[in-house]
Image (cartoon, rainbow, N blue to C red; front, side, top):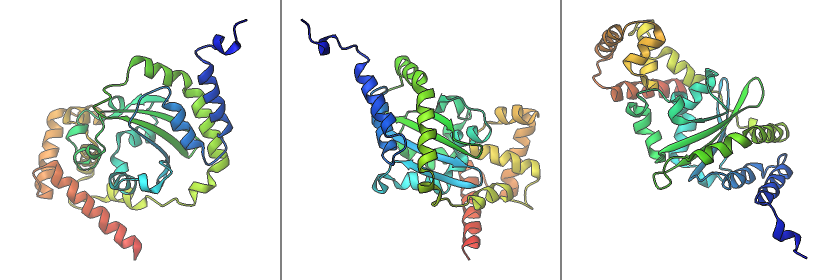
Length: 272
């Protein structure tokens, strides 16, 4: 008689791995177990699990070891996240459960100072995110990053992630119900960041110019901004010229540095 393990279906290992993940869903070990489980479905070099909540800075759920949090990731959490395409897509509620960065990023994202100063340092060529709404206020984003050695995500990998996404989202919600208090105690207000975007160059730029400046910092081209604001590309170009004149700048990098200076001033005021 043939032993039963010789008749084991190809999905048996997957079922065992999923069962293990379910067993961890309400434990602190869940993020590590989840990343290990996903590594059986899709190749990736990095994994980041973050919760976003209105009026608060993001909270890192994974990596769980503080030693694995790079300076670049630290800077992202504390300052740059507000210019992140994924964050802005979540804020606008314009994102699918599974999405690639290329699907949500503005058309001129790679030309932004945020990309050059922060995102580029992650050294990623592909990002896939699984977004889960935890409650009315909190959203979780699990992002898998790939470097050039892995190349683009394959159709088969994407299909596997899309198929399991409802289960993963359900387990993430169970984890958050059980463990959220372990994380919310680290919440820090993002009021300085939002106030910086709202008040940057106030009194120097007009409201429309401030609005366009924010869109420029996020990575939208003149053509995209024109479509978003229902004005002509030529009008956007005039506004951009006026913005540089009023701020005494000539490049997006200079505008970005002025914005960071403004942010630091607000944070210093809040610390006093």
